[in-house]
Image 1 (cartoon, rainbow, N blue to C red):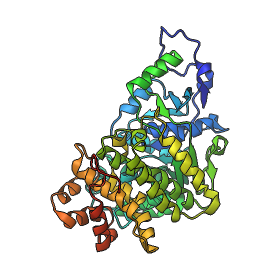
Image 2 (image 1 turned 45 degrees about the vertical axis):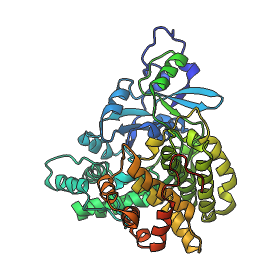
Image 3 (image 1 turned 180 degrees about the vertical axis):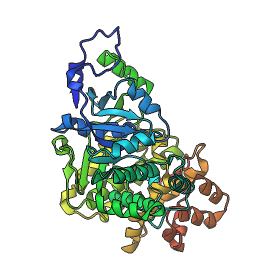
Image 4 (image 1 turned 120 degrees about the vertical axis):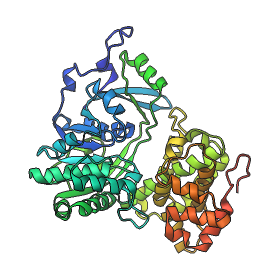
Length: 474
């Protein structure tokens, strides 16, 4: 549950007490949700929605970190509490969120298994990034990926704990099967088309490679819920921490800053129950694909385009890049292509959605850093650019605006001082090639089918250098 800042202050600003759970309103609800991927977005989105549910007192979250324990250690000092700062052009508002009752180190796989196998646990939510599902370009689990191979060896030997979110979840589901704790729902909240199916393929693929009987149990007992999630949540800075101290009169080592806008669309079954998230504005639908594509293409696609084009032109934030006419024109052109291929009709309210995105992106008080968005491009472009490009070409059009996003990524991959990508080694090797051979090799890392079309390779190659500093708009 959450409470507005005016209810938790009244303490002298000079004493700066640590944020804690001393007020009765922050009594801990029981753990019924387990989350993998404790980060800022999870706290501004799923944790916030759970805190606002009409039955919030019944639903506590145990949130596990990914690669490092830092976020859990910091939150544990505050018993899971944190301040959500909603940052609008007109100013900030503050609320303390109390739905996370157990922040945990993701490496504590035994605790994860204990919680997932508890009969009270009904939901597992995931924000582990697109790359963590380890699906190859063919849409199936990449069993040759080094971390998948390593986790399978650990699972098979029983001699150690898996190191990836996927391996840890499969290990925990095996514990639930052994405990006879019954069915539950896995809710994917990562930016992937049909993300419930992606999670299903990844989990059942790894389970089948380890234990066929476990895979059969997962198929019969685990519901994979698809979602579309939306709330711009930049990384927290020291200035944000200082702003909370100044406004609220307490110390919070883990505040989260987010835009006021938030959206959550879900589709799927919850066999063991769920919070009443609809009380906070969540929407449950039978067919989620139009909403997923609207968000993946218009919001996330534009973000990726701005991330690469903006940095190539010397910008560091979304707002700065959007103010650059060349970047803005590229976004508008991509949106035109995406809109032409969105199904769902008037219910999607595309013109209003585009106008709202321009306002959200232009909020200069939300410092959404392009370097953060640019990570894992080989995976993200597969979902954000390729579907629009293929749809355009199927209609006899060039798909130039979608191809420009990929060209910007290729330019960025060669120019960036730091390049974060699950295929960073392969990208570096491809960048050693020349001419169209280089372009084709890089395209193949994103989508082999696209790379096999000579016309697309030539199209992308011709767009290279578009966003070079000082280049004219094309």
